[in-house]
Image 1 (cartoon, one colour):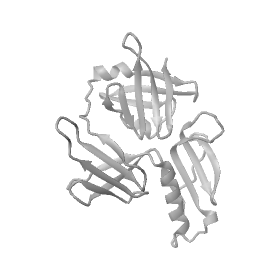
Image 2 (cartoon, helix red, strand yellow):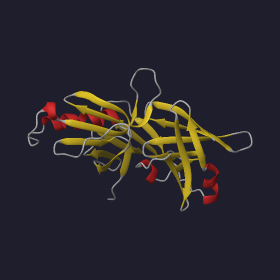
Image 3 (cartoon, rainbow, N blue to C red):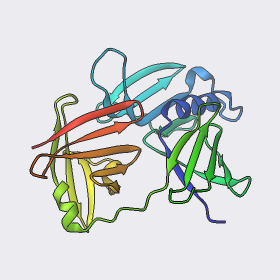
Image 4 (cartoon, helix red, strand yellow):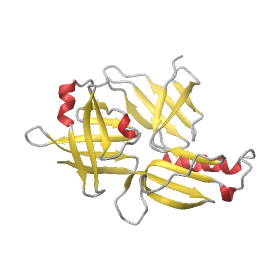
Length: 236
């Protein structure tokens, strides 16, 4: 059976699980106080009321946060033995079948179960995702949206967020649309935006929704990532 890949934004679960496993490892030869965990690609909310930081880094050592901030301002520890680096932007894992319609995540940071429900006449198939003991989340199947280069060109431009004081550039290359942080090359910038619905795209755990003005031209887009909702980037 083909492998099914499912991606989720699971920053909290990944961080706690990875750090706990590292701390308990008998082979590391290092004490908990010396363990270092770097979480990259995260959306950072510090609880102060300030705007969330996108593409942030959090460095944990000895069970305490030692540094946190934007990726280009926080140095990620070198990959020495015993150090962990977790990319929190998106996690991909394999699903193992346990019945004709049920699957379980393999090597995932949490107990994740997937169930596919037979579609009712005239309705799309359903996928239900349950993480640990949380309420299952339902997802409807959709047909992939295919946009021509001319259609993708409508989204090209510079987009700025006053809230985050961050500039993103939407660029068209080889018939694909990319979102890039101005003057910086990141993992996200190398992944093309995947259209899902009209004026909606996904990439690296982020959901982007472009909004048009009264004349049908793109005016701005909003970003959703986990608990961070509707961060607006105005087109310049």
